[in-house]
Image (cartoon, rainbow, N blue to C red; front, side):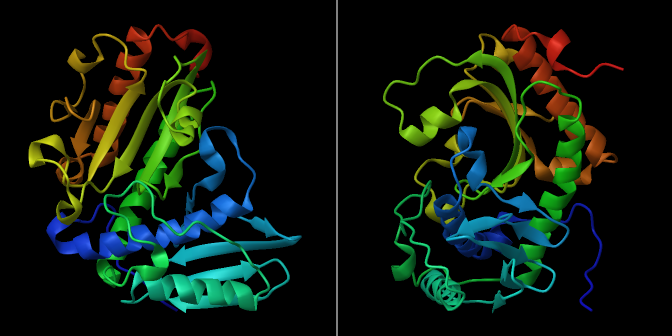
Length: 311
C-alpha cells in the first residue's frame, strides 16, 4: 500500500516546480477536453470542471454511447486511470513523458475501451499554444511537486467548502478549472450582469450573472510570461474578485493585512506562503474570503439577508 507523508500546507516554490506545473497543466487540459466533449453544458461551464479527491482529481462520470466512464488523476499511486461502469479499466503511469506521448497513449487506451471521443487538441488560456499531439517540449513530472500541489488543493478544498456552507443563494461547487489550473468557488447575487460586448462565448457564459469568486492558483509561470513581473503574480496565491467590480472595491478594508489588490489583474491576492507560515492558516484564509466577500456584497448592494445562512 502506498503511503505519503502528511503535511497540510507544503512549500511549493515556482522555481522548483515550474516544469512539472507546465506539463501537468497540459495533461489536465487533455482530460478536461474529453470531459467537455462528453457532458452536456451546465450553466457557467460547471460541467467541464474536475473534483478534488482524497487521492487527486476526478472528472466524475461521463457518458459515451451509453457507456459511463471516469478519468482519475491519482497523485498517491501516480497514475491516470480510466474506469468504466462495467468494470473495465486502463491506467497510465504518471512519469516524465511529453504531452504528445501522454495524449496519444490516453486516446489509445480510450479506443481500447471502445470510447471514441473526439477533442479539439489546441490548449486554451495559455500563450503560444502547441497542439497536444505536437507538443514534445513539456515533459517533466516530479512526483513530489505534483503531490505537493494536490495536497494544497485538498487542504484548500476543506476551507472553501466550509466557506461555501455559509451561503444559501446560488453558489458553484468547489471545483477545479483545468483551463486556468485553479480551484474556485463562486457566489451569485441572483442578478444578471451587464452584457460583455466583444467577449467570447466562454466568457459570456461564465459571467452572465453577478459574481464574487474565490480561489487558489499556482501563479504565472515565468518561462511562459508575456508581461512584466509587476503585472503578474508569479507565485501560488489565493484570490478574490467581483464581476462586475463595484465602485470602491479596490480600496476596501480587506483582512488580513497581508492581502493586497492587484491593479492590473483587478483582483485581491493573499500569498500562499503567507498563509502557510501563519499560526492559523485556515483562519487566515477564511478571514480573507469573508472580508473580500463582504466588501463586494456590501458595495454591490447584494441582498445579504436572504443569501446568507445566519445562526
